[in-house]
Image (cartoon, rainbow over all chains, first blue to last red; front, top):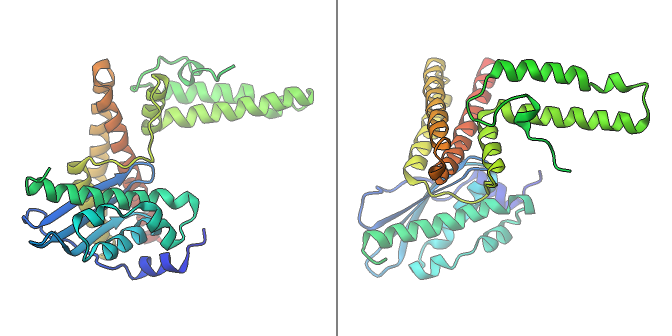
Length: 128
Length: 173
């Protein structure tokens, strides 16, 4: 399959790969998986006292589209509030990366990871 | 007319535990009977039917032979088509899966054959445990949600097992 240059760029030079201490109070962790392809994704956010996402990291085991989607998601989340981050849609990620239709579900995984990370952070802070 | 039940095709009861020898024996028997070559002298219509029957038979055999697709097929007989595209948030399990994939990556970087062999043994054991868990959950009709979660887990382990096989092949070269 032909991947777009953006996908290849994010795949070859993924941004923000790594991990934060999942137990730390200012970290939210989203763990999601796609049974169809066996992809596993961990996306974490570091949130400051103003409720702004200061930093984001991810680790994805999956195809190029899943890696590129999560890499782009971490880039977009930085500097956003939790509410803003939650509005990131998989369709926006897919459009930016020019994902082919059969790979759209990989970007869904990234959107779900964002939501899961935000929810984990709020649960820690008793904000749910 | 719908397709016949795969289990019935092989004279088996619909169940997760199955006699693999019986499945293989019956498959070979049916494959001989339905082989399209046997219908070479017949009408086009009959030949087409033979090709279709042969394809259905192969699909049935492959579905039942593999534990994950067998489990999925059982669920579908029961009226549940698992939406595998849907994201799962089986957190503890996924944390472990990420850890295993990291481990495999390290073994790959070190071309550690002994490490890969013991990793594979652990993976096989985990798959067997999942199969046992599915089998007992399946026997209890009140535990359908458990069976669905277990099938999804099987999918992840299958993927990992395929990666281990690929890695072994690469390192063999």
